[in-house]
Length: 171
Image 1 (tube, one colour):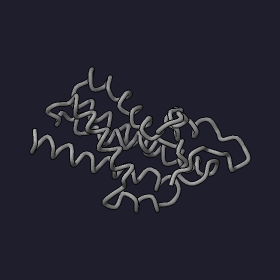
Image 2: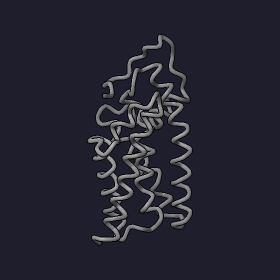
Image 3: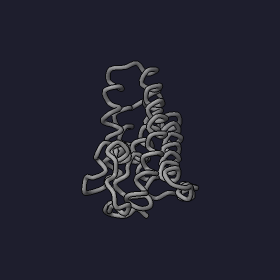
């Protein structure tokens, strides 16, 4: 379970770069629902791409950003545990990555109704991230930042599967 407030347990200042990455550029410090803010940041950063780039460019940039931020976020989340304890609530890079993964079908043009599908994407991702069904919770047992990132990556993957199913079979 994530602690409510980051308390420096290392006794030395947390370096700025890993702190910025782990907190998704500071949104993790917002007082209510930092994970949701991390996911919303992913959408805000993704929207200009969605509006102004082709589907192919949007998909590959989103995919590349998710991979790059997974690597950086795993490192920064591991560092955050040294200062704030296991899986601190302010470390929300994992939610940013998970939401980008959840947006991949929309990036590829799979969504028939993309505007409301953005909200469905957010709702699905946050549902899987909070409830943690179907093996998501077991991902948290991985050590350090790997566990912090893996559960949200799997939540994003489950969201992708459902979004594709909605667009293929329901709409």
